[in-house]
Length: 303
Image 1 (cartoon, rainbow, N blue to C red):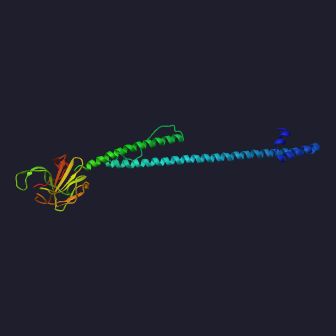
Image 2 (image 1 turned 120 degrees about the horizontal axis):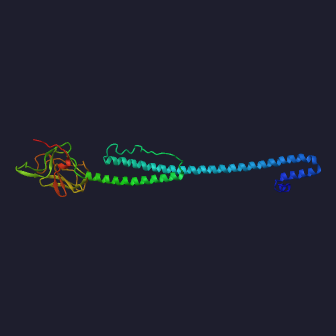
Image 3 (image 1 turned 45 degrees about the horizontal axis):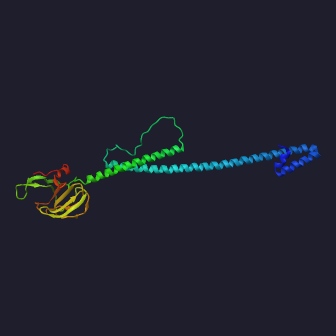
């Protein structure tokens, strides 16, 4: 850089100093050398100061960029954490649903353990995972969980319907802690002698004992019938109708929804009866059938 160029671009105080040095050099050459040295030192210091200022500005700019990058990275981490929480909630819901279906489906203990960790394996090498790969992987897991949830929901509905069907089939005694005193079919008539066809089975009971529904259903009749006395009839909606006769009192009305094991009457000896008991009949698609096949191995009174 020429002196003329320097004087044109240098700060005002340096221009004044350079002009002063030039004047001294013309008047007193000996002093000029020292002045030039001092001037050079001043110019070097000014240049160094300008360089430091530029470096400080660059450092400040880089610090700002680094802080912004950290903020962006933290926002990305927070977004992934929120998505992970959603996946964990989905997984917990599926585990709870799986446990419930295991109980409803009466699966063997240990056949499906939703709390056990799944075994996995693999070989190297291992590399760092990019954020985009992580997001894609989480998206795939989310899709798999949604598909599994839909399948388990369908299975739950099927098992629920199966449970409803099961509860709508006669499957218990209408009297607690009882036994059969008279079976189904031909038997000696207890009144006039001879042979009669018994349409149901009789259970031992005391007057006032609770008479209970043997399955879920709707009361289709509650009143008196010739020979039966007080009668309750329940339609189970699947072709089955059950009849409970000789009651001392009925406690349900037509249209009532009843559940398996719910009390519907009190035992008695109304109608054509020799003593307190519960007469129980099962009708399947309009035809009377032997109730014993629905009751398992209930004892029969002998003698």
